[in-house]
Length: 107
Length: 114
Image 1 (cartoon, rainbow over the protein chains, first blue to last red):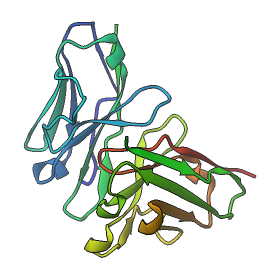
Image 2 (image 1 turned 135 degrees about the horizontal axis):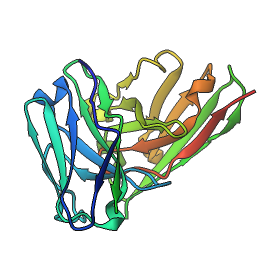
Image 3 (image 1 turned 135 degrees about the vertical axis):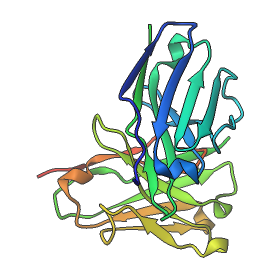
Image 4 (image 1 turned 30 degrees about the vertical axis):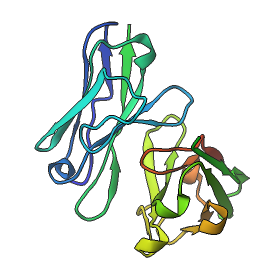
């Protein structure tokens, strides 16, 4: 299907590992990208091309893709990582897809 | 420093028109494919459309909800991206962002209401 599915929310304690999943047929053939959106701010790219980290993004952010599932991992989550996270990809028809977003709570 | 700054948002009645602009600086604008993405109040991100670079044909693609009503264009001499929005609907109310894959502007609010 031409959509990306994310869980609406995840919760993690500070210092623990947070994992956010994104599933969709597009991910089997196209790259996954991950954006972090802090409250009231524009999105920030934290992962591109499945598992690459842009300059300035902390090493605790990593990601992987297997088949039709992409996973964003935040190792040692910090309070400042509390945000909405969106996966993004394109499908073979050229449609641009955002997941519905996952609200990560760190407390 | 890379900057994308949107402008042109505001309040418009249903059926009206609005043109958004996005001025880019700090990178080679002419080389990049540019996107418009929107976010309705309390909702997630929604891709609106994209325009390729001139070298890649400067063609634009649109999401189904805006196809035929919105037009994306660019003026590389002014490092500016545009979004012409016609026949606006209440459901077009959102913050509109211009973006490359990496860089995003702060957004501009568009409210469609009578």
